[in-house]
Image (cartoon, rainbow, N blue to C red):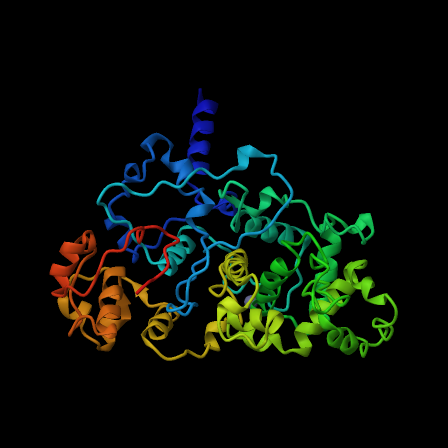
Length: 457
Ligand SMILES: [Zn+2]
């Protein structure tokens, strides 16, 4: 009896763990000063169409709830919006149908669900002891286990559309344990070999100054896309303008000019001669070395240190790009970047060289201003006092909740004369929202409640 009881308790405990990698960790009660938690009313999961009995194990384990590429802010909102998920042309057929993500169900009720992502992550950190602060990958090698965990996490939390247009996670195609399994030119002992990849990455990173978390996160996010999720070392297709110097290696060096430039590297003087360029796909070391060489030569670290994913992506794919739509695979690069940050112990929260100390430069316009606000980690707090919700002094700006953030945005856009005090309850219908704002200048757009909705005018 006692054992049964303990087993049941353990199952409950595991079901309550939101994230796979937190399962093994010790639960630590939140600190007392965090009074918000106790005041929160429980989420009505039935509004999501999830029966209460199965809610704990389903809703929080659905990677789809955490991982949609959040494109809106990066994009020029006036430009036509492409599909939110990078669609990959894959020929393999997933066989593990039990891994299919359940269909997402959106609330049919009027209840409103909201949380500030940063506050949410911070809250998770209070609940689970995360080891000493500052445990990060700056100036520290990966272990094989680190890399396995990181790759597994990113593959489970980034997505493609299958032939039936269903959203599927990448691990369905490239299982957790598979590495460069489609690279038939490398020795078979180098395929699916995490020890080798760990050693090779660590060596090439150290050699070329890819030493901080920010560098490594941006490198891996771009490498993820260039190598088709760590499965291949060569670009597909044979009709490229730059044949035979097509993309090869971890960061895909491309065009004759790059192969010629790489021949300045001692030991690789002959890379441009004959068909030697093919060696980049037949050796993991060379694939890694050309990648870190390109990274260093083109000073990609400078963008990485600003945590600027558009900057690192365009330097690798299309240096002349001025818009994200001009960078191949941008949406997946961005989705992977977000997931690598999470896998890096929630970068930048535990990083000793936090990139937020080297803030990125912001463009002009209200959206950029709001982005800056969000990047500065404005604390999420629901305040009820009007002055705190509508004024612009330090105390008022220190803490915002989601509706307050929206009201400040609408004011800056010129839709309201002043910052209105509107709660999320007033935003449920077009009519109540218009009444609360005192403006008819706002429309409800169909499907705007969906998480992959793109802003429109
Ligand atoms: Zn770090």
